Length: 147
Image (cartoon, rainbow, N blue to C red; front, side):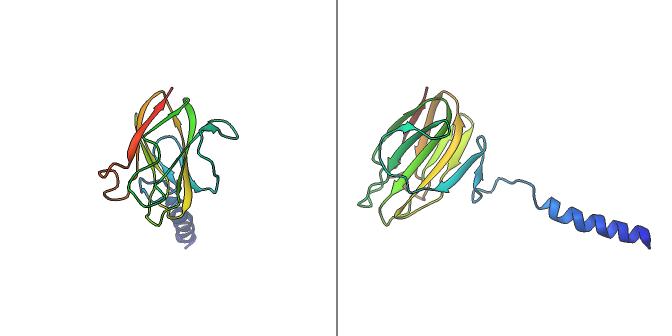
């Protein structure tokens, strides 16, 4: 009977631990590409600047009138930690995804809000685009050059 109790206890402990493993679900706040996180932010402005705590921040905005385009089609950043901040003042849902060189990270989709994603990027060219269905095909995309 004691062995059965011990086995039951071990199983009870193993079940919650098994639920702690990672997955490739795009809905989580962790994305592939070096520990990127997505968070909301109310930071304003439109210029690229060095971010607090190291790394660099690049900013872009969705068209405030609802057109399927960003205000920039090219961004530049230094290699290392890069934070992409996307402002969407329109009522059309948008997000931004950065892809290339083994990296694929995206912000949450927002309307009338700001979202951001941070990741480590190596020198090279990356594509950024809105992953909402049909938006990339309509031209809501650009190039991020990392030096």
